[in-house]
Image (cartoon, rainbow, N blue to C red; front, side):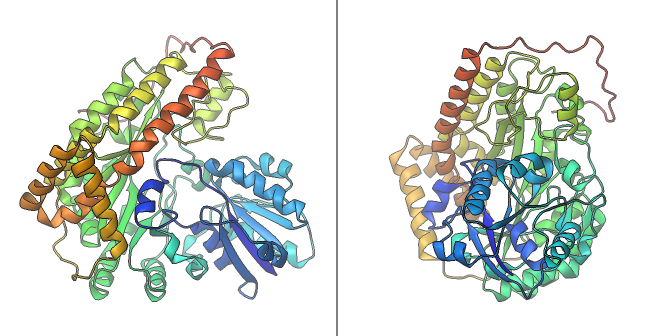
Length: 533
């Protein structure tokens, strides 16, 4: 079998970073880890070619070569996924699809013409698909009722990737999250019992990347890296030794729940292993909203203290924020901005709440008749809410756009980044010195020119620049690269404003609906003490 693996296009989002990537002559932040893992699970006597459409389109020769086209996508890639399914069928190809979006909404890809739906987790459903292919079947839907043991997952086929095009590589240690946030589809897709690979497995993946010549960042793409703290610590203790033996070739980023701050040993192990940044799902500083959405883990201690502990240990926080929770009071956008300023969090993803398919939120809103017709849940920052909220949607949209623009005001962003790095800790080791790539030097010079000379940020930039050199010189390189992130958001602010504005105008022209009124007696049992900011 000749297999063409096709990864659909991502729209511009918080994570696309295209303006920053242009500076360092790279196309995409992260590779399609799911597809290269699929290639590793399928029979290795089959032939594989990978086309990441965020880098380039498939050639006529590749289309002609393929016996079968396999696509995987997240919900934000829906449009291009459906287009590529139709294109492959137009060319007379057998088409198989999988990944989070088809698993959540299989009807869409079926209607587009996909022949095989390989849903849920591939360790179980891909062997079913292979058996069907070997029997000569040309259609099928393959689902799993249980979760696989990921200790059987093979090393991804990283050799199929064009390393020059990516800014970071991806690896995965665990799947699943122990918490119960109402809006989250991770626990729907992967369950609430975190399953981990063995330390030996993960180190074998890093060995392979190292052998292939990779020497830049690695994103640990776990949705909650610390979901199983015992197993994570076992990994980190071995990773610490591996990194020292290999002279610290990688820098790691990941995602984790805020309770990371409660485990000093875990944070210190991460820093000693070369972790530099962690994405935290903070969502909102409003206690009532956290309780309503069942994010109880964020109410157990002071959020600002937690973020400070994480920074002082040596991890740069990235934070996710959401506006539009049920019962939310006016001014939520301003409160999020004030919290980010108070906690000195440089980068924040900020979006309007979405009811993603099959989540507890989606089921509740379906029962209440509140889902807006013809709208899919989409976690892009340029998407209007897909359900009727408890306060006017136009008020939420206005607050959202104003807050997004305020968060990425260039002067305020530099100030937050500066305050963050003044207290930033670091590892006990120093990586061996090496000559920087010219493309990186050139990019930093462009950033210095724009922020230090061209824009209104010039005085702030130089004050902070020399102050960090004097007061926290070990963090300087990381500080300067974080300053560069505003290059993406400087323009993205306008994209968010324009697209939300256009969708809101259409919504209002259709006749704005009255806000949903919550029942008089809504009691959410608190599982934790009140939040302390």
